[in-house]
Image (cartoon, rainbow, N blue to C red):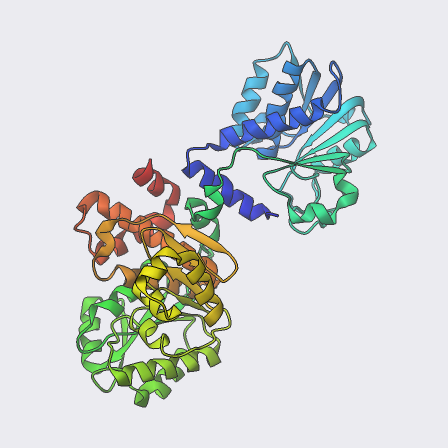
Length: 501
């Protein structure tokens, strides 16, 4: 089962693997023609009703293939050619126009609104791009299709049927046969009266496009600020990190969060450490507490402040003092009570390995191999050989998403696994894990689910690191990664192609 959004993501991730949307359209159209040939013999007459999106393009390809099989084909355009914005559809229509001796192309007009007597009608009007209520000429086209004689074949989804919910707009095509692509859309099972026979056609989407996070995920799953955005809409992130010894880690996390689109990034740190952190960038708001490192004495005040933020990052640079570990556990318990999304990283994970806390699906844990071994009470060698299983077990143990960092990142919510292959050996320097936490924290603050925030964060951090690697080789710094986060967010496909071809 796949939603319309997931399908769009898969299509773009396929492009990243070198399978163009033009090729996917070609395969889709060819599969439509094949299914018709299996049911109707040429030289039967086929009428294709075509809208102005990708669904129309599938219909144009089907028309071309049906001609080769010996069918008599007419294409009825609902819109002027200039209104067809999908480039692949436009290109395939231009091919049909050059086949003027074998394909008849006409524009929908009042005299074509009478019921047709034909052998096959192909509904390539709306597909997954339905918007209710239906408008002209779509409304009239659906009425004509339903009133006409002949085998009615819907492309992907009967026009008028919501592919995700099965809800019907004002009206919908009542198909005898629906050919949907790659996988079943959930709405098709709920609108059986309109779907007819259901066939799933594979169109060449690589399996890897569904198990590896890719540019399509960034394009469709990272929230964009609305035009009327005000301060706070992008989310507020708090980083609890830093100690007398480590000042850079929480700053890297905060700066990465800001570059990912957070409106405000706070670092809550010991007083002297906070002054140093403030000097890194005026964009970071440092919140000070007394002492040289985190202790239980300051947890109450910190928790009160955390009520004001949208997401929390715990761990970068906190240190490994026994008192700090106790404070981290108390802090995490309070965050769980606040029901705030949280990223637990670095020293936060070392403390968590000592205590079995339940996060109720609101946390992302970002361990490297050794930290994952600590969380699972195993050793690095065992983790290396059983990472997928260990990730799932740790996710279930803490009821949290696990983002296991490695040559290939593994992200698990206890049930599903997603992989990420962006990143490079040059990112083994200090601070790159902190940038990852900052990106994930920023996405959580925007309302992205922990599972999505984790795999999106892994991809964005890794690809930003890849872009930096193209300039600096193995001398990449965490700040180089931060500088390239906006490029990945604004141009994910172009960035990916630059690195991976």
